[in-house]
Length: 358
Ligand SMILES: *Cc1c(COP(=O)(O)O)cnc(C)c1O
Image (cartoon, helix red, strand yellow):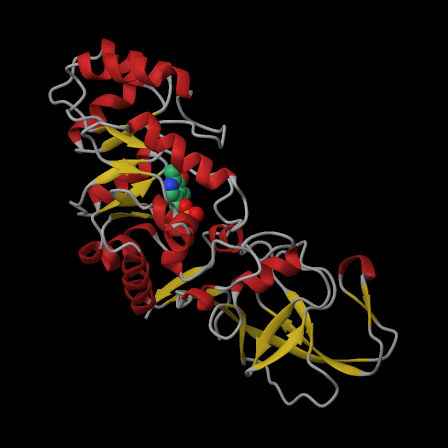
């Protein structure tokens, strides 16, 4: 009998990247596989997608080094750049491309002595106001980067949307216009769209799209699921029933006695909890699949277990499989119940969970 296990269908990854690339047929694609491939496994996801993408985007130098150590030879882009000048030799030695978004990173390049120039993507803040060079400073950065022998020519350009998951939000078109204006006439490559831009904003595609969450079959947009875009969930989170028990009307279940049984019923205890990454904040009524039918979570999620109401006539047995999300139960739906997004649920899986590739 298995405890928490994430089943990853690599064929779904292959299907999803085909769907995504068909939406942006004239663009190349970086696959965003940071945070352990959004919980799906960094190296296995890279290997599964390798022949279908132009490169990989990661958030941490260490993620890039793991990919190189694992034999990945495709281009790799550090989406936030390097965090310290001491990282630059590793960027060069591992043939990484880097985002550059601030004065400190620029000075690191200007002061370094590197064996080879590095391919740099200048990040412009077009309106999200998280990372990036302010529009007023762009021409100064371009001039200094072009004069810097450690920077490969031509210089490339990147920016990121703040609200592209909201189809009506005017910020997205403003960001596209500003990005175009600030990079007009530049010979370098341009990249703006993550998943929501790729799927919903065709004029944002430019030279490279950067899909992340959609690769895994999950919608970047709330109120919709991956299936609405023709995507398939790559991860199905499973566990097993480790007890089936009678409860009497009025019994209070679990820590804090949060849920009180409204009628005599059968309760199932499932071997998964917040120690595996299932959210403790999940409310009563969050659905799970047991033998193909939806049953509600009842009572607080514990570290290693949670409880479901199987109903008075249930015939489920100890050892039966339970699906927490994935096939037949979109993670987006669980996220709605919990008050978060699918991104957080899949990324929060802990190291205790077995990841099995099928
Ligand atoms: C994570 C990330 C992406 C991918 O975003 P999704 O919404 O998961 O598609 C793209 N670009 C940058 C800079 C990122 O950090």
